[in-house]
Image: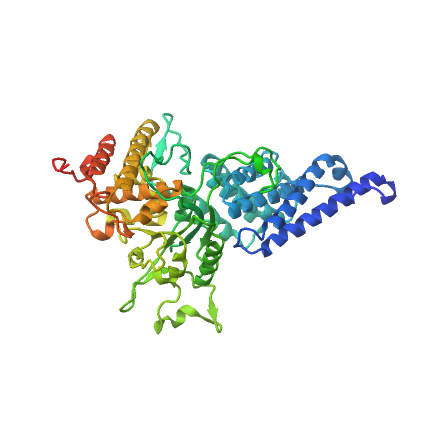
Length: 558
């Protein structure tokens, strides 16, 4: 208590301060305990999160109700209120990471926004304490991640400018050693914002913000006569281990794009301080929840396998598991070896000796081989591999007769498109935003909103036609149809076929390794080289005035 003699403070006010201190200590203790919870497994952490939310809800309301007393008797500073709001924002963000429910991102955003609007951290610069300024900088970095995930790019740009000024002021005043680290944060976010190869512009030349999450009417609907399986995508592992790819926080641009392809547009939760996961089930939206997912940035082999085993164990009946691998290729070293994709070796040490030093005599241990996934094919498995050695996964064996599909990226791109790889893979861009990918291979870097929407309408028609072709094919492997009942997987499959057909028609993509492949193989003449589909793609190219880049089909045969 900072003001007046202890004796003079009324009992009620003294109790207010004591209760506040208790709640503040309890909240910090619970928040710090979150770090010790296992990162995998969907159930163990929920009750702990619930208790933490309870305490923060009470703390937030308490400081609102007793602000005057806490100002006078405790000396509550605005940055301390900002810290509480920031922790609540972090709680919501981590709840999103653990549940994949995008609504919690909106909740995180509302708390982070309030901090900025009410200038909770504005007085920090007056205090001669560098650790307080670092809290403010970290708040900015976290706010930027949430805004990126919500596609609030206009806010991101404002935050980056503010953060840049704050970093300059911080390094100028305190002459600290972490200046390079904070400048790297700025560089990373700037590269992340500029990763999209095409800008869509309004009439006043402002940039249109495009969301690539699943919304009503995004994907092809199931129509009468389409016989498909009932499997639902319940869980996904999104793994990013590409060298030199644009990243921010622990998200590469490929991971960022793929996670949005597995989410619905977020809805606002009814009340701001509702405890996540503890709402009355009757109030829950009737829409199906997003598939749960783990985001693994540069995992070691053992980390990857631990998360994979947890997903496999908790997979509900009639559900599918998706594994997305965006990773550097590891190539065969001998007979009977197809290679695989790289996992991270930095954190694995054996007998004090980094494992990669032993690789001169042994096979690469930090490699996820197709055979490593065999045990998990006991349940329905949908694999996407975006790698320079994706074809290793074409040599899969379905040992247990469960639905199994692998979508495999091209292993090389024509020279004109190689320079862009740092800003994300073309293959993953097709799965996330097929029209943007199509514009990119057509050499277009900007477009008016009206034309973009016209092309999107045409692409929706193409998607519907692909769905018809796939479900009516006589020679297609049943595994594709088993997964086609799920709206997320249906959209990925139709986008994959569009990508495959478009690249095969493009005059620059001449070699077999420039094309995506699948396991099991798709019937080419019925799907990726279907004349009707090729005609539709040429029409899209005509709308964009780039038809000359694509090979004409012989419609007489059709």
